[in-house]
Length: 321
Image (cartoon, rainbow, N blue to C red; front, side, top):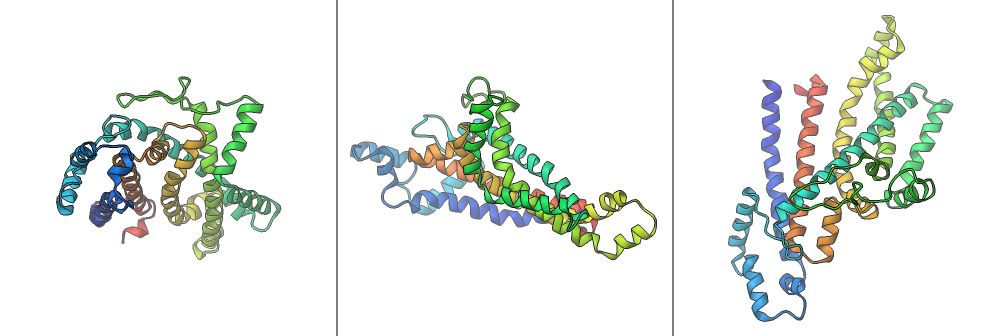
């Protein structure tokens, strides 16, 4: 019950952040230099077309009325319509969001799968050859951005070796409509997940090593060893659970970085996700779609940070006090 009360309290604290995110996304179209409607339709648009589209977007209303109208649409799931794709923004985001979520979660899983054992081994073998080798590899992972790693992976594993597909999300090329989602072939996830998760794995490896070294030097670890527990039990059952709190916090923060990095990765691998949709909306000056995409990414980031706070309170009971 105490954990439930703390969760509800954190949810209440997240509400002002949600309000700020929605408000900033609403102001986006008003911060664009010049007339956004004129930019959407181009210089050849007639005054009647400009007036009609301005009325469609509600830009002919006073700013407070526009703000309330936008909030009403957000609450009811009505984010407007795409002027270029002729579909509702909610439908387009609903079709693309699962692809971005699948890519981000897979990249996060890949990073954790590498970082946890590597960080633990580096901490246990501190100062030895294995620790130095892991440090060199993690430094390489930090030095190579996904923007450069993605084309290299395509060149080696897709073009030269032919092991994995170059782009898309399934055997049909990743095409889909707003009304349905094509199945994702796991082979198409491998390269973009590695490109996104490599730098995350490097960051987490260093974080896991630092957190484990701090815990392994505590008095309770010496007590556990004095009781005759095996080194494996000391590391896995005592040190690791207490080291997870800062690690989980970093994972939650890095999830937002992965969402931002998905824009670049999805463009490189032609992944039909939210990031690629955002780039297309920006290039087409489709402001309603840009607003919807940014709102989805921002709200996802808020939700992930809320879940992160709940998870590390659940992992470490000392945080519930």
